[in-house]
Length: 615
Image (cartoon, rainbow, N blue to C red; front, side, top):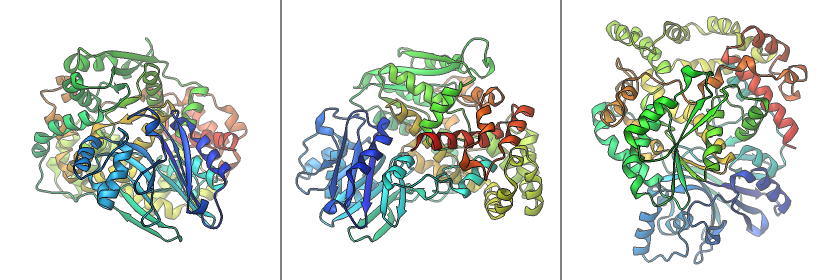
């Protein structure tokens, strides 16, 4: 995992200082090397920050140039099947000078052209100058695991791995995107429209394959599209093939020339990855640092501490590997939160990912440079039962399937409050708008801003009315997984670590996208195919247990203990049109455990860091 930059000027050569300043802004992404080149008579600059994972010596430096074609690439990510692709290309006559996956991508482009990307099993964001056509190729992996942002203005186009680097390279002043601010303040949504909280900065779509001509024309295409739901596919079909797929996906992600570690919580997703590592760890060629689990100091948040459950899973699946416990105070300090906000670079809808930031730092300190996680399991297989079960009950009632609704209502995660909240979204929009305005976190929004957001709220209402059959794909492509991917990317890169998850293997994702949601969520709970697949492979408690609250959940409960009075006295100038800071302070004082108040508080914290540190 690295950092990349592609800067195109429409009229004059790119200034070197702009390139250097943008790379410096995201220097944490590349502690092992920096480089850049120019093409198109200086109007195109390609920059790179290296986190060396394969062939860690100087031969792996980027930008990398193909010796025969002159094609140049800057690449962020890992191609896990690069050894197999290299062997195939060598049989076709290609000669390799390094042991990197980057060189394999260059050769694959030369040999297969645009067809190369469908052959890649991995994650990436890249910019490649193709000499034959004198065009710039931009691509991003199927799920968008690796970030790539764009700002297109009259002066040119800027691509970079982080949004703040885009602003710096383009010389563009940071301004808050009003639509993104509305979505975040009302429902905590971000990363869901392809926009960002920064006006003008957008995401390159997952699966993109773009060509930018030297003359300025842009062809925006895609090399991948997810399949439609296959109603004939059953949960048993998926459960039957899933263990072998997970074993292979894990084995590929254990490939590394640097030390590897893995996260382990008390839940099923990281437990499944631990099982796969336990089956494969004796064949790992890189040093395996071990598993790391996260918990709390004695006497604090004991009911949310998963270390005992993680230890049980460890004994069950990988007892002869190291296990390290990280214990913390569940109340983040102000410096902790500021570091976290800086690392994330964009607002975050929950403080719980601070746990991930702490874990990555601990694993890096122990020597690991690659970390395997269980990210994506919930999104792929319907793990958010508090979200999905109320939707299923609502749909069953609407279809007059009362027996199914009653059966679902007996599940532990089917609280009456969640069901009522989900049903409330079916009210007529004018009524719903009036009711919503009285919600505590919405009440701290400025009146004019709320009144101007009528159309924005209607869009959000449509999202909340999505039926169960469609909500799984929506959560993978738009609403939940994109946020999870950003959390992991920024937290890991903050410590110079590459994060990998077997659940994000495109073969597993393809299978999950084809499986109907009704086969993932039912009267037995969520993640039904995964539960069946792992029934004899994980402790019974993990298989039978309800959805865990999640890593870092205790941190979500501490909003009333946070001290940010300076933000209420002197709120950031850019947030004044959106949030009434005095009302927010009073709301937190009266309702210190209402986590929806984190959304306006986080916006203030983020804007404060943006205004004071992004100059």
